Image (cartoon, rainbow, N blue to C red; front, side, top):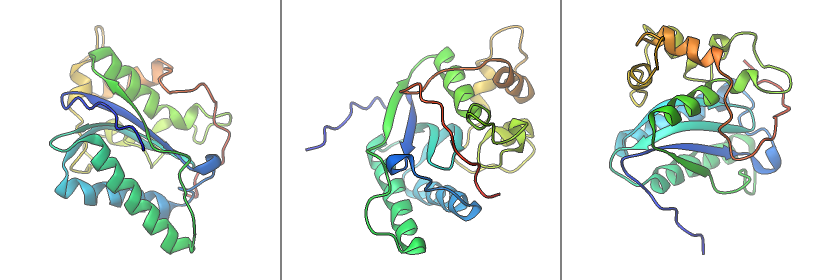
Length: 201
């Protein structure tokens, strides 16, 4: 029997899910859009707030706060729906995930800044950076902070993180992006440096 994690409804969680054996299960633009579509679909009936996300080719990161339902229910729906879609699109049989999602509670101002920055920096923290500039990576929430006039998914909150910035940073999304670009963070469950090809744009 799988042990259910303790859930604090007032906290955000850093959630990571990897492909089985670190295989690329989000390798194309269509895969990335499907994963985002799944989050949007689940959000309609099981609302949540996300402060940061980054979809990589063999894993994804989100910084999420469920609003009324426990985290495990939301993640179960998201991952099951994507798995079913993947199986149908690629005629795949068998599991696609390495294991059940990894989640760490983030319950402090500094923690939220640290984890969100870590998530957003993922595309340039690989052995070979996937992009030259973070705002060029389209499968992350960073470009939506970089240009906060862009339309964002209903689940993305672009207001909280800027309010948490320490001095001398100003309280705006441009300053938050500068924070991400200035400070390399370490917030994952292991210290493995990913070596992967960028997704097909």
